[in-house]
Image 1 (cartoon, helix red, strand yellow):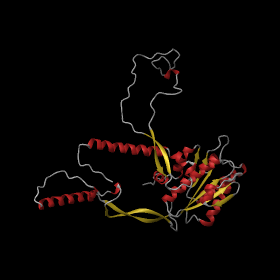
Image 2 (cartoon, one colour):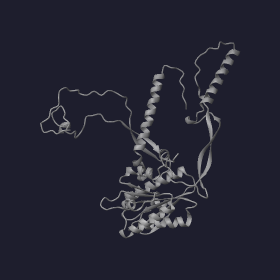
Image 3 (cartoon, helix red, strand yellow):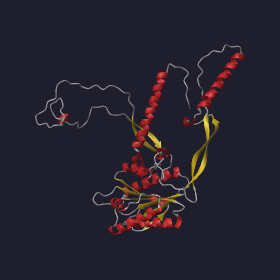
Image 4 (cartoon, rainbow, N blue to C red):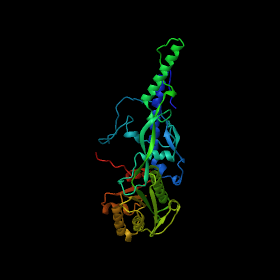
Length: 392
């Protein structure tokens, strides 16, 4: 609800409050973006509704103030063993005098409080920076998105970006003229005094959302479920796919999803099995990608569909399958708009498939990311679904 002030006495405090609110909003948005990686990689995020709330720590805002130092006089001296570039303090030693602040401290800490954000609101922050790349027009359009149509009339309630300023001023002037006429009819003197806006003066553009058909698209999620994928890696992979699916379902209506699970043998599963089932065994990466190729051949012809297979693994593969895995990735790149490979918490002792794929595969629509720790998940999503810059 808009609030209008009649007086000017509190103008300074009012302006300061507006500035504080703006700074607070910026601080909240900054904290949300900084904590996105931790939130998105939470195990509890899988299967949650859009109203699920997540707590985010935020530092409180303090007013600017001068900080006074000791301002001690004199020249710093050394011991004679210093080298060029060393810093000296006034106590005669090198930087910091070699004394650390271990144990309990006596300095003031930062004030921290928590704000809550729903999963639905979280998707709002994500959707501004992500998009399906290489989305082409296909023969049959089934994806429906909401696009803003033309402005059709005015209404008394709405959001600030749709405030019709000219119409609002006109309503205020009309009210002012009506008041003057009423005073004249009653024989009262008409004074030229301040005439502030009221809530009733506000007018907003009425915008009707119109459905718009865009191109067919299918997402094929492929996950390594072998024994090397421990519970932490599987939770991270499922979080990655869950956030990806929630974002795409929010941004594109009627998008198709397919799920493939594999060890040495691949299986097509439904969404619930994909996000909750656990298996163990050896690893043939080629089995999962070959099953995705069979799926494309049966149901999603490249001439009619935009195809986006995304594969998640820890990068460990049975050595006899490496060559076949590389060939299968090349094959799926030929029929896809983009093939994404996400490597999760890879081993530091052996060379993983991430390095082999990047060395052997030169297709432009191959996108690989590596997630070495949970906080890297958000950056990996941005790389994989980055918006394309269209040339003017």
